[in-house]
Image 1 (cartoon, helix red, strand yellow):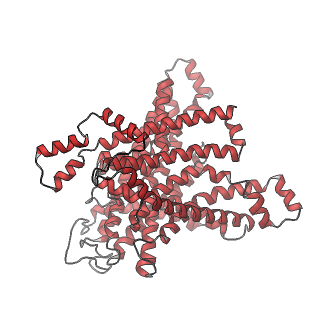
Image 2 (cartoon, chains in turn blue, orange):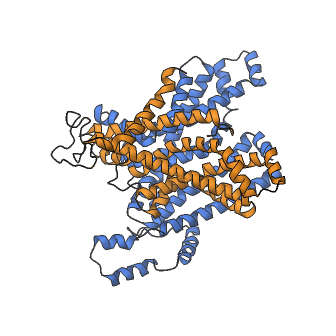
Image 3 (cartoon, rainbow over the protein chains, first blue to last red):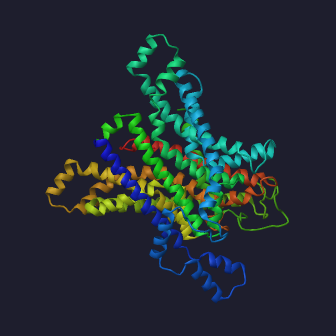
Length: 306
Length: 269
């Protein structure tokens, strides 16, 4: 029972978090000097009266609380408003952009998890192999070197000097770069946890039964150490959001990141707001899911917190 | 640890700091001077590292970029330190709802990845050097707030603070005179960890065109300009990328060493 109520409490807190963040983003986006009408005015030939009429038409002359109230009520019905630049529904734009970003993020996540787990298990099963050193360097690299630097180096090496890949529109380099980044983040803590688990009694039993070290590493030690990876889910998602944003901009890929950056440059409030809120909400949701999943995978956590 | 591995980050950092310190004093290195007849030159005499797409000297821009990038990052970390530790300690001293509000705000800021939050902040602050410093500073405030709270709680539980309270010293005075000096080590370690992350965040923002204004040559801005001319002038792209990567790498390595040695609160991610 205490587990349920503390989870419910956390859920409530995070829900409140989403509302407050939404309002903060709403305010932030509207605190910008200049709006979309200024953007039009700078490009076209309009007189003051027609500009004022356009503002009134878009509801830009209403009070902030009125605007937020209207926005929230509509958003709860799935209506995120119209893009101020294109006149198309924002929800449609997001739905249209999402698959490309999910594909990039998903492929990177898979590559990163496979590489990170592979390296950690390799370093455990074969301690004298260079895997441990690779984990260490990859960890420092992924923390210290931003993905756009790796991206630029990749473009220089593979597209310009070797000529193997086109600069724009390919997904191999972005997936590789983000995958390495994720692997660098999870391999080190996972390796430490694997070594911790390897000291447990049931592992000694498995050795005594005559199982091969590889089988023990994959089937016995790894599943019992995965809670570390779950705990890092929030951090990984944060890195992935920044990473897909960068990769889409750098490699000219369509997706949520390109959409957001484009909307920011064009001051398209409804799109900026909806995209940032979508990303923020996904972080909060993943954080909640992480906590719950972590407790389920490792009941010791719940006892420790109680 | 081999001598090379121990010293390499210090040497790289020293090079960067020297460039930042004496760069503007060197004659003939004007990062803004355009020579449109000498665009995209390869490294050679006259321009040691070549020129970029506007015919500007890459070495001069790199040196100016080092100064600006480090300056922006250190100022952001300073804002994060002052705001995070200051608000955190004040909240802790005031206690009750004030403390709750401060840390609820920090929790909320921490929910968002720094790059997303600073992006949202840049939308409202507008492009510019001061905006970047503020946006990045705010994004990293919680890190200092949590350190301040941890040290505050540890020190408040100690015997000498109890003694000070018995003597009737005001809580604010205890925080200022006893907690703060004890927190200094942990907070400065945190600065060493935040500075490279601030460099990265600023670079990414500037790379998106949402950081410093286009004419301010921080590394991120230089890279953003050079990316379009990667084929004609690869040197103007490669060098700032390497400068950025090596500097953040050395700073992170040094920050981690500092934390392993001095941080009483143990290693955190």
